[in-house]
Image 1 (cartoon, rainbow, N blue to C red):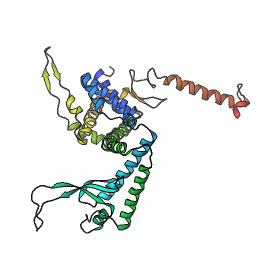
Image 2 (tube, rainbow, N blue to C red):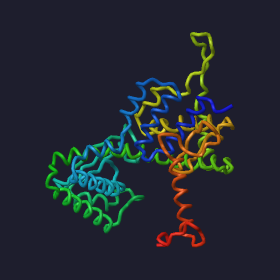
Image 3 (cartoon, rainbow, N blue to C red):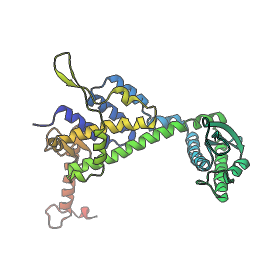
Image 4 (tube, rainbow, N blue to C red):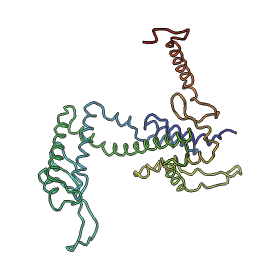
Length: 349
């Protein structure tokens, strides 16, 4: 009977995501496949790709080797600042490499003398010298859970001062350009969060698809339970009467839902829901697994037209390359065999 067009679309989304050689490729191809699977508009693909931050596009914002080096210093600086910030009742701690002072937002909790909170918490912007911040961190007023030892504070502040010297030593990085590069940090963190999530999904899918192809008992896959849970949370698709008088089922996802990136949770939903849906819908028909293949040459997954196929389709030449490689191997073995009529001593070297 073969595999239906819709089931093939589910499978294609999964194999393209697993096969992608980079998270950039995985994300961009994913939105194209989402449009095909759920019948979305071309606008969805354009907008989704615009919203998706690629590593390539981000790296292009850093126009020189010095700017890339400066950003690496900024990343290290931000890690140290978070560690110093932990014992303080505030956030957004930042060491100014030019004024050599700290800026942070101090949390103020209005309360009565007996400790009862009144009103609303508020933040006040503060500027502190290195000496003053050291006193605050080492004082009894610092958070006892995260309290740092004096030698730890000294090491962290020294590391920040060293980074500041290295940043100021970058001759083609002005104070204004440094500020612009520093402003890329929130964007970078959001991007890396999403790309890390994509990378994890890729690894989980490869593990699952491997089990289906070989096959191992799919019930033992550690990721399938989570995928089933995510699938079961997807609202049931609504059925409607179309203009041609036939019953049709609405897509389980809306375009605007998958374009929403207001917070990190929305970003997770962009991938969790559709991928889980495609996995379960593909596996619900046991006959589909016969068409999921792993190429004998390149090890990429693909959805076959014929369940007996073992190699990728054109334009990849996996079948030709595989048998050429196998033929060369067999020829070498024959040429190296002294008992063979085709024996050649040159092949022993």
